[in-house]
Image (cartoon, helix red, strand yellow):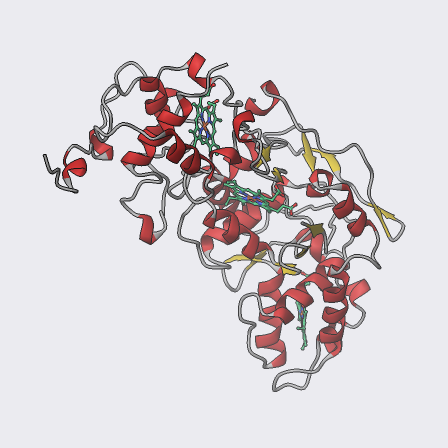
Length: 269
Length: 141
């Protein structure tokens, strides 16, 4: 494709290990993928950013994970329950969640991600309010739950319910140009992958590190916040978090990272 | 002779009326000659051309962070005439391919769901396009 014919800013040739767990940062792409190899965003970051993610004590995102662990144990809502009341030890009960979501939600007849599953349990099983989008607790608890899958390769099951249809819809969104600047996700993360756009080294736009910690804003960034930010940069109206459009995109983009380890919480600049 | 301040706009060509002829736009969009210094500013400004996001340019090496999504523009005036440069800036998709990453800077042939306050607006004004053309025309090696 386009990217290979031009000079190519290679991602680094380095390996990532977190708390003694080796991360899969390069994997053979699944059948039908535009690339031969899927690459973690970690490989595209500066040495200092990469080193910060490598060391859990240095990684500021781990504070959100710890906060999530506290929320896990905290009773909330009218039913007097915490997450732990039902799910006990997250290291056991949540160990595959980060690698297997989004899943099909038969009740809602649409895909569900970790944030929405948490809301579902809060409403149905705790008698609590759903979180407002990007509430600090939502981000922390999501980071905590996904972190339980650290190192596990992303593997969503598209045979559930109508997920395959949502995958198709997400693919359409991925290749549709939006905004006054007329870019699609693919303009930046496929055709220009490996290039510099201003100071930013363009990665494949993978989801395996979310929620991520960003130095820029000194805080955590959820996946739908990142999607919205990228769409805003095309000078388009931003779809709502968890809208059909962004849920379809999450299904499709998660598939595009099949085989990459969950790195939550990844570190970005 | 006193010239009415709005006279410059009388000759302005609307985005939909710009005529492309063999990869060229031969008519000035405003009839007012471009100003290369203003053009250099619009070129670098992140809210205007933001051309450095994708193109590196030695002449502006004092500006930080030049991208490499696109070819460097050193000596670009040796490769393209001002009429061709005008066409590239107005709507690169009509000069290269529909697939090019380069946005149209004076075109309403844009993506879906344009931000509400930008609907019907172009990235650059007609005069800014003329200024950027005048700036690029100075880039000879």
